Image: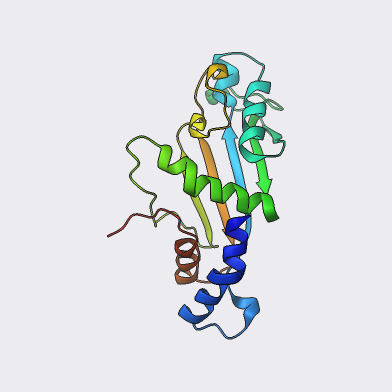
Length: 180
């Protein structure tokens, strides 16, 4: 809850002054965080039971993931229609702030040879996307249960309208960006 309180008390005021925003509704804020885990290769290589990955993602995110299925068959990828393809969790509100606080302050510093995250991963709509190569870096995941480490894609959606606003918001939230 610390990150949400910090945003409401300090970060929003600092952004208002730094970006010279007059309307308080134009101050950039976080809208949602989406966590995706690709499970297609796990199902093909190991077994058909992906409940262990569902449990791990629910421990990481704090809520149950949704299973997404393939909409059509693609033979080159050994993909069949209605085959489970990935797990998805959308976090909003307090869960979102709690997850980001844990990610920035606990999880990313635990990564061996951590080289910071790139500032170039913003898309044209203000989303910031980055990839964590192993889901086992989260402290909630029991290390004894892991059969194969999976990567997680994390998307942070903001309400900012320009690249300067996107970067300023996430830098104030202490995202560990690469320093020049």
